[in-house]
Length: 150
Image 1: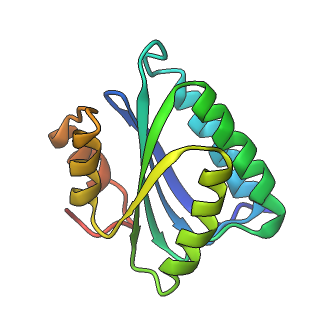
Image 2: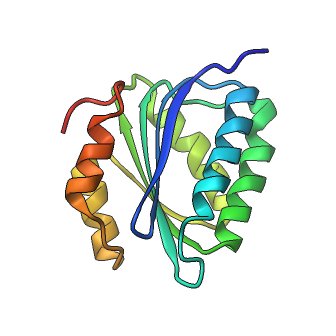
């Protein structure tokens, strides 16, 4: 089966970036986990790091993928993921997305917060003592064609 869902991954200092439009199928989630794993190799794993996820649309995962998602989330935590900021944009089912992702991240024991704007997520990460190169982050996000421009 072909991937369903669109996403971009990157790094900004000690912050792993994931920007995507859903919904996703199993193939897209498996490929996304592999791409995140490759990006993690570019972080300084001797230091804690954070993740900023910007989700656009109906970003749900199929039930068949939930356990695998939790498994890969636990691996990210073992590699130093300290906290996760999740921004949900342009979604009619944001509460359902929050329930599904919240359950996964609680199972993986990852500190996480949900936000309605990228700016508030960045501020929270700064309060957690993660520095971001804001101009580079803005450039990265503006290149994601499915995100509203900052």
